[in-house]
Structures are given as C-alpha cells and as structure tokens.
Amino acid sequence: MNNIAAPYPHPKKTLRVVVGIMFFLAGLCFASWASRIATVQQTLSLTDAGLGAVLFSLPVGLMCSLPFSSWIITIIGSKKLLIAALSTYLLVLVGLSLAQNIFQLIGCLVLFGFAGNAVNVSVNTQGVAAEQLYQKPILASFHGLWSLAGFTGAGIGDLMIAKNISPFYHFVLIAVTCIISIILVARYLKNDKVTGERVPAFVIPDKSLITLGIIALCSLMCEGAMFDWSEIYFKKVVHAPTALIGAGFTAFMCTMAGVRFIADWFARLFGLKRILQVSGSLTVTGLLIAVIFPYFYSALAGFLLVGAGVSSVVPMVYSAAGRSKTMSPGVALAAVSTIGFVGFLFGPPIIGFIGGLATLRASFLFIAMMGTCVIIFSTKAKFD
Image (cartoon, rainbow, N blue to C red):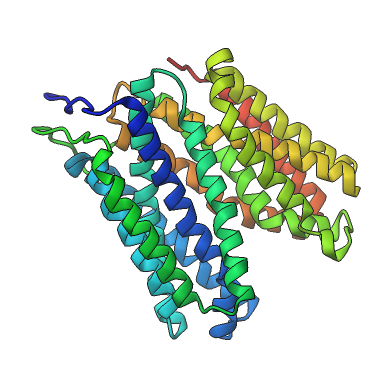
C-alpha cells in the first residue's frame, strides 16, 4: 500500500461506543425481520416447505455480496460502506413488509442478504479499527451487543404481535429509529479509506487466512445447526414438554450472548489460540453431554456449554483476520467470511441428511466433530 488512512481525530472511547451502536442496530434490524417471519408466512399463505425455499433467498443474496463487499470496501472505505449498507438494510426491511407475493418476497430477501453481508464486513472492519486503537481484543464485546440486539428485537416483535400491529408499521418504527441513530453517530466512525491504492476485485487469501476461514466454517456449522435444530432435538430426542421445547435454544442463546462480553478479557489473559482451543472443547463437551445423556436437564446443561463454546470463535477469528499482513482488514474479513459462511449455510441441511440416514443424535455427534476440528485447526494456526 502506498498510503495510509488518516488517524482517528476523536477519543478512542468514542469509536468504541459508536461501533457498538452500529453492531446493535444491525442486530436489531435482523432480529426484527426474524420476529415476524411467521406473520409474513401467514399473510402470504406459505407452507413450511415453501417458506424454507423462500428463506434460502437470504443466503443467496449474502453469497452474491461477498466479492462485491471485499472490493467496494477498498474503494470507499468501511465508514461509507457501513452507512450506505446499514441504511439500505433498514429500507429493505420495510420493503419485506410490503411484499404482496412470493416473487416480491424473494427479491427483497436477496437484497436483504446482500445488504446484510455488506454491513457485516464493514462493521467488523470498524471493530478491528477500534481494536487497533485500544491495542487489545474488544471485538467479541461488539458481537455481544449484536446478540443483545437479537433479544431486544425478539421482545419488540412479540409486543407488536401481541398488540396486533402489522409488520409494516413495526418495521417503519425500527427503520426510522435506527436511521436517526445513524445520522447522529455516523460522523464518529473511523475514516479508513486509503487513497491512491489499486485493489483487484478478487484476491486469493493466503494460508493463514484460509486456516482462519476453516475455523470459522467449523464453528458456524455448529452455530447454524443449533439455530435450526435445537428445538427439534428437544422435541424428538429429549422429549421435553411442549412448553419447554425452546428451553435448549434459549440456554444456547443466553450463554452465547453472555460469554461474548467476557471473551475479550480471557483472550487478553490467555491469547487467541488458547481461547479458541477452549471454545472448541466446550462445544464438543456440551454436544457429547446432550447426545450421551438425552434428558432434559443434562441436555440443557450441554446446550449451555455449546453456546459458550461457539460464542467467541467468530469474533476472535475476525480479529485475527483483521491483522493480516497481506490484505487490508476489509478484504481479509470478507475472505474469511466467505469460507466461514459455507458452514453456516450447508451445516443445517447436512444435519438433516445425516438425521434421515441415521438419527438426530448421530447428527449432533457430527456437529461435535466440527467442534473437534476447531481445536485442531486452532492449534495449527499462527496468531500474532
């Protein structure tokens, strides 16, 4: 690189607060949509199979966005990309509520996924910039705020449903509130645009980034499976009472969110390698407990451990990728995201396939193997 970005002109705490707000707004936007999926399904009279096919449009948009995001972030910088992408994300959220048929919904979901990935790459790049100012790990706490926003968005969604408020008014309220927040704080984001730099549209990641991507892939496969199969596991394997089939997923989400707020502290004490190894170990242990002892309280304890295990992996991997010596942070993050997202996308279907051939317990043993892979590749990885 021939030039460097301008130094941050405000106190470093300002950037940390603003980036935290951006993570929260991004999480709130996604959670708002997730909280009204059932309403949209009912409005458009979609079957469960039809809804599943339609929802696949979101990862399609995300995958299409990956090469674009890694290229455009080097042209305009993560600050401008985050402002534009998050604003678009919120506007498309409103568009989702206006879809009158399946084709309009598919189109909006592709755009939603496209904008969502651009937000993911740019907001994590800003998070890495904040880490560089603090010179210590803080990225996991930002992801904790994203998870906290998920709980907040789900709670608001439940309230809107209880009050019989349509998705349109719900999403407009969220969009207006978030856009006002963006206008108020966006000026304090770090301007990391590098002038005079020629960047190719596609860059092949080096060996270290590929290793980080594989670690993310294995962890996201576990995470995606837990998102999609937790309730089914508690219903069909644990045989939990109907009112408690969501307990496992809730336990998983609580520890995943909570541990993210303390993961940075552990990383400073023990280093990225050790915390990734421990994370993989917790994931494996939790899954084995749930599989070997498929009873309510033991499975609940296992899911708590899995949530703690997967909580820190992606933030820590992103943090390491952002310090790449061969690529700019935005490009490195996009490269690792591309590899990692394969696990999140294809993990749940693989679990279903294995469950069809054998049993759901066997599927969860396969997820445990992915946790083992996190340990193995973390041990081989080299961190600064």
